[in-house]
Image (cartoon, rainbow over all chains, first blue to last red; front, side, top):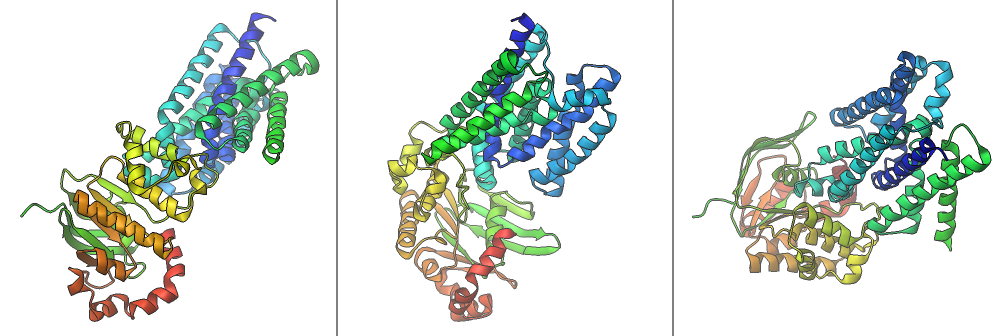
Length: 257
Length: 243
């Protein structure tokens, strides 16, 4: 395997780890599907980057984080729920993205592409994963209280607004790690499915995190190997997502048994 | 005389264009057990939330600097999907406040939570256990003021009695100040040494014997209280919780 491809696999695994962990809290916040839509906020930036021939990640990151801040502000100002505000911003982002993305690049932007990863790209991904894992570790108690009851969290001295914003940013950063090879449509599938599967199997927060991360990592590895040696598709997202959907189905069976 | 633990002056709380609390002033002394009564919609829960700084208000709310507040909300609809054991929930507060190791066990034994209950998922606790869990949560960090909203709304009579005995013991043994919202006038008679009644008209305050007279109650509830509670409790509570 060439070095670029090994780095690609390692980066995909890092994304799997971050996605598995973030998904647990997104599930608890009941914003899995709303969170899914967050990844679409990257589309206008990706499209503009393709159009002006700059690094797509920079474009994607810009609109992703600006969109996330907009979602948070709208939520605070209007009192609408996270899913409603994300719904509003998402619709606008998708429309802008579809309009500005050159037609031949649209599929790449939506579904990602298999590509060589440079050592620098890998190191950035590694740093981002560390930031995600560390942030979640530091946030987990305050997040748990804020999810359970914002009032109780506030009387404990938790700044609920700040915790919510921090989580949205961590979520967006996770999406960003997976953006190039999973695309804006599938990047957050790996945030949803492993967490939903793990939830069937455990009642304890620490186990939930471990099982979700494990399912996510195995899905990425299995998807990568199946694609590299059997399917040889030009995109990796679908096989990874299919594996994680398969693990979700298994978890349903395991719960019934 | 010591300075009041809590001084409230000209408090106004407005939702939209409706004044829920209008020009309210009162004080609470350390070690007091202050009951807040009044018909549904009079702003009892709103008052507690304002005292806790959870909602915006106009006017003055001043706690003495040494006041440490614990809050037991009305029954929360715990999300049964949360993979959170009661132990994790209490440990989260201990971690946020950097409380000493052992605080969790101390409050658990104080309110009588068993190891089984601590290891249960928080969404699967019975009404009584859940109420104890919320009290244990409030007691972590050794507060000296406990704000308690309808402590026993979801409990049967026996469990209700136990909760009140526990609160009374906390007040007696630790000199804790209690501010409790209650519908149950017999409880207020038994446990409160000061009553604040909120209503659309002028609020009143005084010891139970002076305040809880048939005349003031009739004025407060605009009908005999028993009759009012029996007919309207459930529906009005639902509306209030949506506010």
